[in-house]
Image 1 (tube, helix red, strand yellow):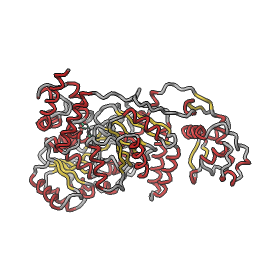
Image 2 (tube, protein in one colour; image 1 turned 135 degrees about the vertical axis):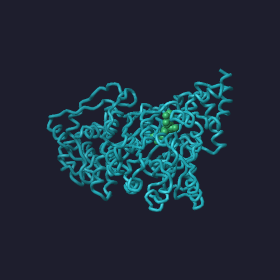
Image 3 (cartoon, protein in one colour; image 1 turned 90 degrees about the vertical axis):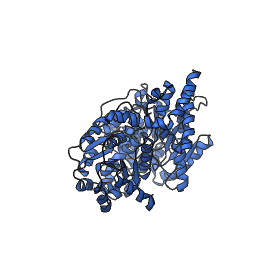
Image 4 (cartoon, rainbow, N blue to C red; image 1 turned 30 degrees about the vertical axis):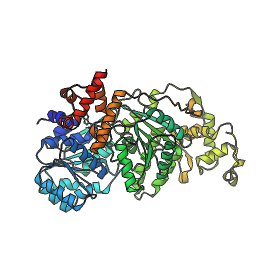
Length: 594
Ligand code: ADP
């Protein structure tokens, strides 16, 4: 079958997305491949589709069992024989898989990197006809990446043991340096290389300085997403529980998820979220890597992520179906300091430096007034497109600027007079004339700057300090102390002035408007209920039955025949055979009502 036919009849899609066809052609032509496509860009299809057109089995190396299981389930739903071998399986289950593989019926085999490098496993694969290897999440190979994994480094063994077999590497996040490293580490030979647009035009990016614990901001944001699915990422396990409790107290469907929870509880939360029975998961970053749920409408970070790679990957979990989705990042300078401290126990000094630098870039990203999508593009080496109205920076009306040179000088002078040995809070205490024990203990009430900044509240001072960080006038010294950079010196000497968006100095207040919710489309909701019923009956996640995008398309087209059904996004023949009749019946019913 030719590829367009497979695309339509098996996967139910009309056309390829950017770079899919080229990657597929390269694999069919026996070439190595390095494809960098954002989350949701459709990487899986790039290797799944050619596997169906080839005789042998394709081997996919993937870091997480949950991820593998999800893929296998999705493929089975489309009538494709896919299997996984992993440590969660019993011996008997594993033997069955080996049997199937020997029989040659399996199209895709998913394994973890640890297994892939076992000599016995390699020998076994050598007895099979392997079309090609796929290294998923390939950035894990690189020490310049954010998720370096030593076992990925061993994957050069693929080329060593299977010199004639193409290797295809896929990842969503790779800076140009990481891409180069992947190519070298996997020993890819003159690969077909493609890098997708970093810009996700269906994601809206908000970043806000966190006010207090950020709960009011969170609630304000969630008002717009009532009844929709989303993830709230928090930094600590304790915070997941606290935030989940807080949301529950506001009658919002939310549950906590973190690595220490009981296995059954974790499975339940995961399951309920997949099946649309739970709207919000409040989680540490332990949650998400295995999630391929396409209808996540929002992602919130309650504190600063460690790297732009993490951040981009996490916000990328929203809107995989291509529909409009929103992201919110809440941050403070304190987050950066706290996370930097945690990196102090990374063993390798070089890797520690890499991580520090990444953290600093993440913080600058959060602070910046430049287009957020453009910043991401630049970071990942793709400046092809700019957003116009998809981030706060771009949407922001020009704001009155207020000159704060005098205040900036006060703060810098406080650093200077105390020997650059103290943290932000202490310096602000001095400026505000605080009687705090630490101020008195060091005799700082005798300094000329003591009390000169009384007129501003602590929050205002924090904003001023953040602005100075943004301008790179400040740095972080030993024991979290704030130090002055060359830019800071210039400001102190009066060679540079400082201004700030006037609105940043006021206290942002968030009113919660109870009835500001968007009305949901009733036709869509009818399809959604049917999907929920079928998903529950067949014990598969709702999005595996049909994606939100398919439901939207159904609601819009209201197909009246099998032919028209097959014209709907995401409905191929196998899916039609499985679920088509029920949806067609509902569609006919709804069509009559119109
Ligand atoms: P990635 O692995 O790159 O994050 P996926 O492979 O999971 O992304 O694909 C994201 C979503 O896009 C899935 O729901 C998938 O079915 C859908 N998809 C992939 N290719 C196409 C296509 N050519 N047309 C329409 N939808 C597609």
